[in-house]
Image 1 (spheres, rainbow, N blue to C red):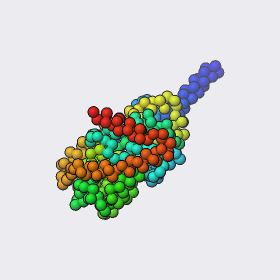
Image 2: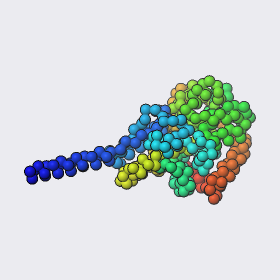
Image 3: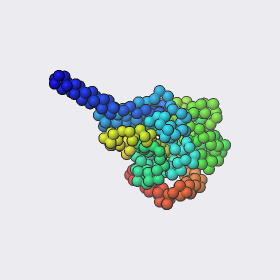
Length: 343
């Protein structure tokens, strides 16, 4: 009887231990909407491996078979727990994240290097996080894309301000819409997931793309004219967010482990992968051929810079309304960080 009692106790302890170990294993769901070939999926695949390694396999991330909800609704998907992890573009929801739109302004990046991701992440952590723009979710990382160029269909080259007149551009964000309006073009605010249909059917004449997305969104046979504005036409601010309750359900050990490979670490990966994607895309476009790259004259650049002054002033006003004490100082600091990153 005594031996039976010991065996029973040992078995109970073993089962309890097994149950505890099983309970600690967590699969997080990710609602993806970028194409498989996009550099963000390459970077996130690396991050997912890092999460599994950092948590000793206790936490895994699983791609859902289809995007949950519309692209513009991904923040609410995360808040409501319809998926555990989402990527959102704040610019897709006008007026909801005004402070974050600083990273979308044109003429910020002094070279063609895709260093905006880690720099914007630092600025977010140091200056913007205090305003809690993504309240209701846990922020895994925030970053900005590579600076964009003017990409248009053949015969619609943009080499002066006058060339913008009447052209229809797909606007990736609220800020991009303001830029398009300021140059006299027509803004068509649609998500990037619709760009192939919009461009192939003539609904738009162009968009603002860096080189990588021309390939990943399969528009290399449509956008044949590329005007690379010094400083860029703008960027997309992007955030990787997690449902707050799901984050809170993780053990402190796993939270610490995930945090160690997220934030600036992940933004650095994204910046590196994005730059590699830009370099590879440039080589692919050269191999495909048929593209015309247009220089920007001093006159064109000066006129464009003048036209962007109201766009920047509008952001400063809206950021101040949203609670930023000195938006101009914040923007100046961001520019200084970008400049230093390219020295």
